[in-house]
Image 1 (spheres, rainbow, N blue to C red):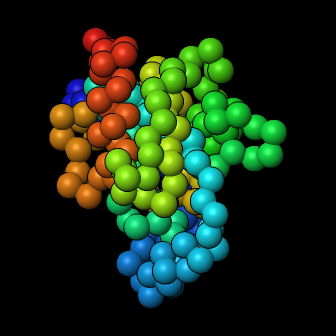
Image 2 (image 1 turned 45 degrees about the vertical axis):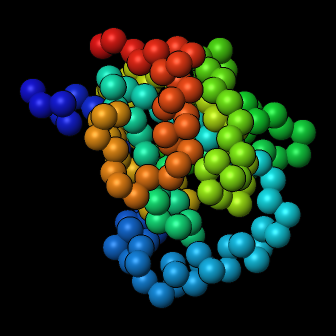
Length: 175
């Protein structure tokens, strides 16, 4: 059995997501990428989750983003901690219910280090349910499992920071 067959399945959640994936480089998506900074003039930090499974990392490309592969996550709602936001975003974007006590804190990465408009507060989670498919929400254009040692070229800098800190604090899982 190949490694890709052992990884949890990723399913598009809606017909809309499949349509967007087919048109990810369309003029509409390019317009969204231009308009997004105008909508978020006072950017608040965002939570991100490093999802690991058997030395693979789950990376996503978001609707309206720069098109780089990054970690799933999003902004905290009023009266919500960054950890709570990370748990909620994983459930909403990927249909992964992460137990709160399984979330590992990694760190806060600032705008100059990761070259984005938003600071990122990152957490890690070891995904252990290979039989539980991941269902993508309309916010996610695409998601893929990548071997930690073979990340794609167009990966957001926050991914390298989170992997570095996970390896330093917790070491990679041996599976």
